[in-house]
Image 1 (cartoon, rainbow, N blue to C red):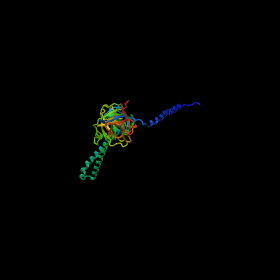
Image 2 (cartoon, rainbow, N blue to C red; image 1 turned 180 degrees about the vertical axis):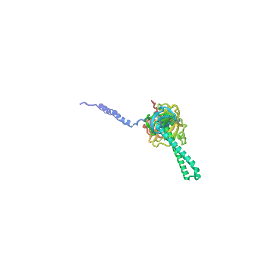
Image 3 (cartoon, rainbow, N blue to C red; image 1 turned 120 degrees about the horizontal axis):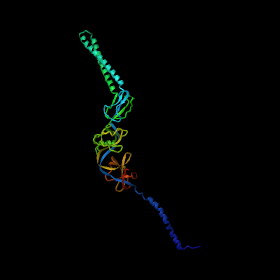
Image 4 (cartoon, helix red, strand yellow; image 1 turned 60 degrees about the horizontal axis):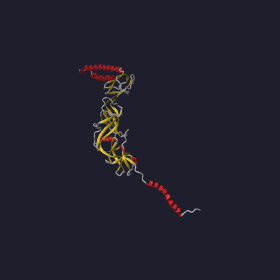
Length: 386
């Protein structure tokens, strides 16, 4: 049997612990890694700026004629003629349609004959009264006979008045066979055809006065308060709607209408279902470019806010009716604050209180932060519209 020397046994005893060192070292590294805290989240921040800004608003508008007249006949008859060109400009009093007049001409002739008969009866009654008055005074006839003559005279006078009124009614009905425009404006497409039997419930066409043209918008209660308060948000009473505020009209193709408009009227109450108030504006329309029923957007500059604090709208988080921003301090710690917001100015939002100029707020990554936590910050890059 081969004998192991003492030197060999000593070397083997020293090498065994050394061989275990890499194994022990590798088993300790995961524990150390687990104990090390994760790096703070990276967020994009932007500095709160302070400057004077125009406070404005924009609303979706529906255009409507200043007057929209539904053209309906006042008599019943057959339509025999159309006297206007559809889509053309007509003036008040222009004849648009004609109804067969023969029935109404006959009625007028009958009314005139009845009036002539009533005139003849009244003339006879007048002669009887004139003849019997002196005879009754001389007691040549009984007083009762004169009283009867006077009663007949009064009845015949009333009958003549009724016959005269019937003639005027028949004349009106005959005139109503010529259906006229009741306002200046653009006449629409005819909704009845020649030969149709039409009546007071039949709409023949419509005439819209489009110069000026109305633009109806619905403003929110917040915007209404911006109208009636002064530029500093105080409860100063201002005229509403204010006709001195110039308005812009932006058409559906993005072009700005060349004429400015003004607010002219407001509804008497806020719609409780939508929380909005209906307001009407007027715009000149000399070339009749705008037509009722078009959609557009109305822009208004309500006031100039002095020293307003502005942050991007995306930096404001709304939760259950409250607005919050995440402010990052010089130590890179986050402070979540509740703020009061004001008007929107483009992609920015006016902050009424809760922040100061020069502070930095999280514009991207609000969901990754919590109050009191540290973050790593980079400058916010506004997305480019493409």
